[in-house]
Amino acid sequence: MKKQQPKSGPNAWQYEQAIAHIEATIHQIETAELPLAETIEQFTQAAEHLQQCKAFLNQKQQQVDLLIESLTTDDATESL
Image (tube, rainbow, N blue to C red; front, side, top):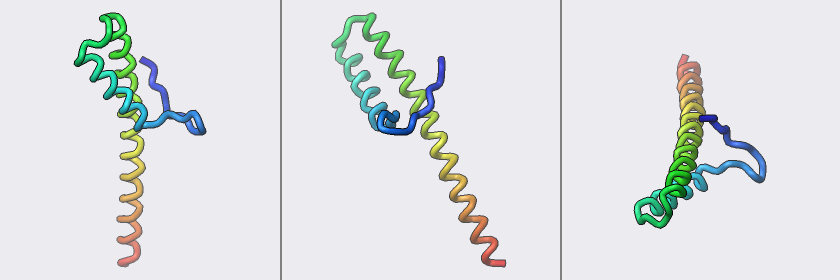
């Protein structure tokens, strides 16, 4: 399965929209609103959105970790 990276610009991928799509898909599956073939297609798309969300959150976690590390390093340097 190909990983899609979030894009920048006006057509950028948005975490909140992906989550909303996943939630809508779950609701449709739980209420059996769709025929089986469409349910499988929607499930596949939701799984792709989940992969994108996971990659996005991992990237943001790394950014936060780096910021915390730089703050910790700055504090240690200042105390010397």
